[in-house]
Length: 134
Figure: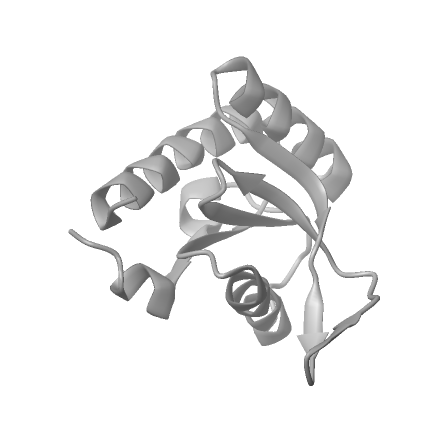
């Protein structure tokens, strides 16, 4: 896996996000957008895990939690979806924590409650991305 491959995958996911938003518009539940986006991604050949449990290891012990990420695409990009009026710092922290716990290099935070989905998306990278070859 290279930085270029991860970046390209995020770009492609963004295209499908725009398509889903164009078809449905704002105002639906997050779960509806998740199912439609997952459908588009799978239909187009991506490997997608939905509502994947996020393991937490604390002091070398696996802690049973209810943490679930929305989508993991091709085992590389964590996609966290929202349908909220205002994004909060806690939403970014949630995505960054999922990326760290799963050791994934990139994440996309997407809010479907908007008229312009392109402006509401935020990509994030971490130390796992920086360690990838170009």
